[in-house]
Length: 271
Image (cartoon, rainbow, N blue to C red):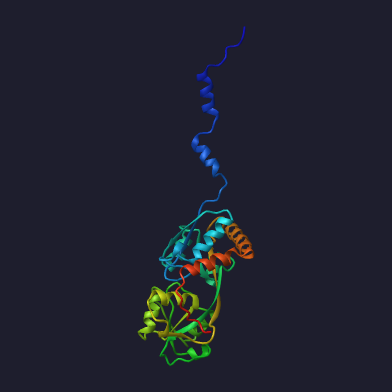
């Protein structure tokens, strides 16, 4: 006697039990894929970061390309600088950029390799009597640096000795307004940022001038909070992809294209 063959209904029920559901299949497609990296940046720091720029600035734009090359999808939001710093430590974001590396920040964050490098200068009004050729010539003066912006070690030392006074504002535009109003004697900033801030303020470039010496050479980085469980892996992956893209010239090409798109055609740095 031949054994009874299972009916179609029985076969269908067995398949339902052994085959993965559509949701499981969808999850399987992304199994092992990293979660999107939530980036956060700050305002009023063009061309590197600003709410009115494409991708919220050159910094987020390049970082997102590097993350994509290293296997990460990413998103970017904009917050006030101090809030961005604080909320990243609260694990609301995975990385914050771009920031200068300081000993205080290194206690809480891991830093990627430098994404940008620049020289910073002292900016004064065009009719200012200040004619310093070094930091020594700035003693007794007042300068403006926005909240959340770091000072160079040299300026920090001068402040600790009471040789100069720092006042802070919400953003660089306000610092420039304070400079023009005579409430601050000078501003310390890199020339790329100065060019774009002046352009977006509709401030004539001939109303300010930079002094003929470099205050400091800075590097800007992506910071990953140490509280993130795979912080070192993210930094290492980013640095590896960044180096490769730098070697191939992709970073230079993307940077050039981006800056040409938003070029203010203003140069404030000394020749």
